[in-house]
Length: 461
Image 1: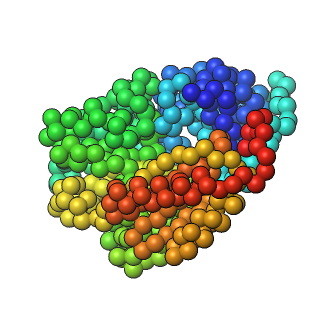
Image 2 (image 1 turned 90 degrees about the horizontal axis):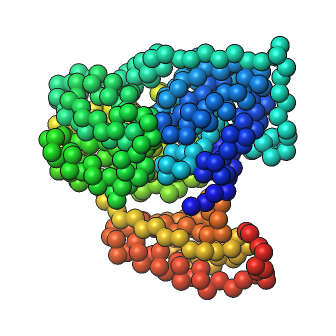
């Protein structure tokens, strides 16, 4: 477990009491307060056990910085983004470590447009955190705090149901198992699904951070949920991460469909009635590109990161976008990955097509994905990318985020970690064997790259 604090353009994350302490949280909140426009700052948390403690620290720092605070208490990350725009706030801080283990927590930053801070603005906050001591106000300059009520859930709910054919979903009388896993998604998830006429079983509804399984909704982590879908005779199962910006799907037979299919299913639904540009990042399954091409609409690929996806969505006026980690972004609701939008769109897709989720998934082009990690120093990356491009000269190369090599039916991505001296290899191909072979071939090339400089034991690339 890494105890060091991770500082990025979107916020900070670390082990509570080690890298992430109340003092660190206060300093970072003060840095954020110094960089956003005048106005109220929203604060929320995802239900983790350490969230309340960090909330007190952040609230104190914001008030002592002279900022007024609207405290949303426990709220999903997409709800925070929606509420920033709803009340015209200066920005927001969400206390969350997303899918990390319980020992972690973090602070995620939003700008006045209700989206995760773009890189340039996030870098200014990080610089203020590293370089400047907080400037605390005297008594006359302190901010005020107000605690929000249920109106935040109601507004987000309205934004979502306006997207879909509520009557068609209600007439289908779906039975749904929702695994909130004691994160922030249970309250709005239950409210939304019941509004859509679903019979709902909520697992881990209480937002207390007492996770019943590891927080990331991967296949290995949600094994206990699979049988619950079958036992309850549900038409579909949904699994959220703790701050409810990611969604994984389980079919009616208790089979894990996964996060990569979440965006593909939602894109299928949107393009059927509202064709337009689609954006994903360069580590998302090719399924989405295939669906966009099937509908004859422009497809665009951004660098990895939610902020990068949103930047490109704004530029090309995308009708939908997101990431292959189960994150769906719909411009009419907000510029944040939203598991609730994902649930509503997938249920509408099932209702309109009068098919089970397993039948719909079967009609989407299937690929197998392979992910590997290789220790690799930063100073050898350029030589590595050049060698890979030369050896795979029949592929289309994209260098906007590491190196991505594309063929008609497969692709390979090689990206450096932002926090460790490693590269991440990712490939996708029609079969698991061919995806694994592609990663293995790239790995063999990387391992043969000579060192351009003498590496000292004290280096930390």
